[in-house]
Picture 1: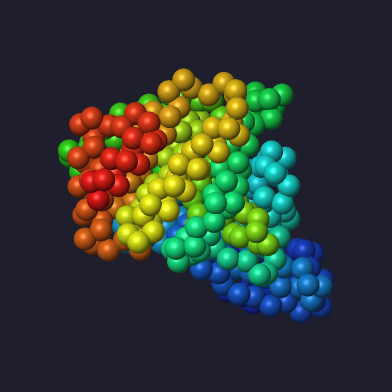
Picture 2: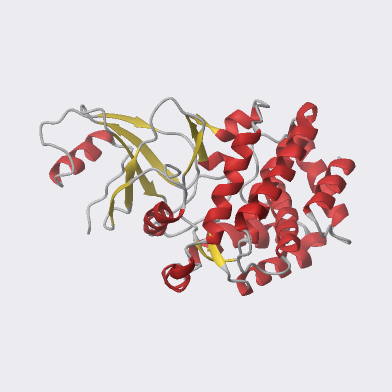
Amino acid sequence: MAPILNIEDHPRLEAYLKSTGRVGIDEPLSFQDLAGGVSNRTVLVRRPTGEAWVVKQALPKLRVPVDWFSSPERVHREALGLRWLARMAPPGALPPFVFEDHEFHLLVMEAVPQPHENWKSVLLQGRIDSGHVEQFARLIGTIHRMLPHSREEIACAFDDRTFFESLRLEPYYHFTASRLPEASHFLRCLAADTLTCRWTLVHGDYSPKNILLHRGRLILLDHEVIHFGDGGFDLGFSLTHFLSKAHHLAEQRQHFAEAARRYWTTYRLTLGNVAAPDDLERRAVRHTLGCLLARVAGRSTLEYLGEHERTRQREVVLGLLPSPPETVDDLLYRFLERL
């Protein structure tokens, strides 16, 4: 039987790094478990040179109240995504890749230097900076625009959507559909339609939670569900965070609405004349509606929304489904008006 390595067991992690020659045998190291996502163990390793690494190890069972399983091999999809995105995204928008280990399902990258803040935490404090919103839009717009001469290579490298299906479509759309019969048809059709649309590289976890702010720059993390598919999912997934925070922080509601509009407008300008689907805005709106429901009734709910807020968000979105908005502006107006 292969040996087991739990990177949260710091002495064993230190022994692994030294025995594999990743660090010097006599090099003193310090370790710190990092909080964050539900799908990985994450440890910060500091070296005496001042260099710091983040070590990620994918979990086979995610840390959520309901059963949610996914192969730990997805960390290697993240490693592939990190290497490709470094070629596509603006300079400095991703932490540099260090190495991966297929035996223990590890990914190691350089740590984002201090001081930095998590953008989700910043937004929940009501600190909305239009420059950050525009960076957020330009980053995903640049990724969706891709490298024109590499489109076929990218489509081949990221053809497998297994992790996207197990970590996004099933827990967000199918599971929510099983809990909300009145939304079941909409969500199951949305999931099926998502799999038929393939036009760009999709991050699949494009959220403020996965953005660190360092010296005014946004740095993108967590690429384990990256694939070639429907870019509208990234837009709906990210717009959901602006709208859910507008719901949660009533005094900042109009500021978050303006941030969402700015995000969409800047994204479209960044995307330019790339061959996106003619119905991209409609797809973005439907993915937003689907994710707004999923984040209050799916396997991964937004922890900052209270029970009353979850109930209200569910009611508002269900009220929109019989005649869904067709544009982002209409979505913003109708969602916020009903709140």
